[in-house]
Image 1 (tube, rainbow, N blue to C red):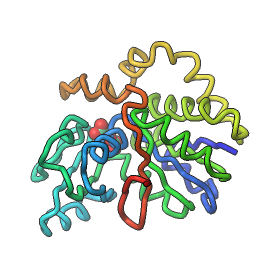
Image 2: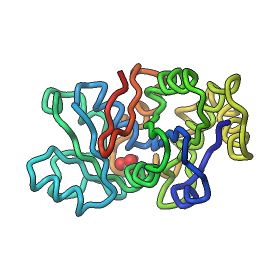
Image 3: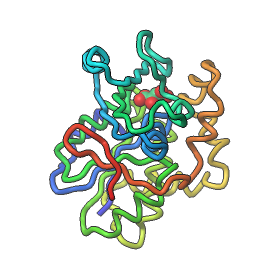
Image 4: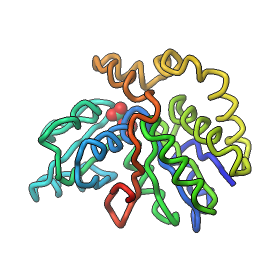
Length: 233
Ligand code: MLT
């Protein structure tokens, strides 16, 4: 089965035990995590709160913090994928806290496996899942408890890729699939109309949106091991 949870506020309604949860925050947390590991970061430590991130910062870790789309003062890294394409991050663990994405990850830990998905690695995620005989829940990070367009579109795209191997377990799987199929030829223009794209536009990060809707740029799968996201071998 494949099921879709449209908000971290609803994840408590789902039984995650024995399942694969794919956490998604297209704009931009999970796109950033995939980019960072694809570009040589050692591992990602996602944390839900700024206080946790600060304690890592004080211990000398490289830390990224975002709230409301903007970089949090005092933290060296922001939440743009383009900040993770340089030598500075190579071989290093990176601690990340964001408004919604890292919260969704920390709310998924009772699952058998927690993966991080983005359009950037969607085919690799689908291939990884089809090799296993497990139910899947796509956990959309949304925005402050509300459903958003871009994560729902990713859910629909993943449902489409898994259509032949998984039954659609609930209405949200059907809804997200139909929504994705109705706009997939015009994904960038659709996502540009999302509430968060408008928020990011005000912060002048339009190129991030264009990058985050690119499909299968990276052939890696991110999996949570303890508190760390690493690539599966
Ligand atoms: C989030 O976690 O809400 C986002 O990744 C926000 C962003 O930086 O665009």
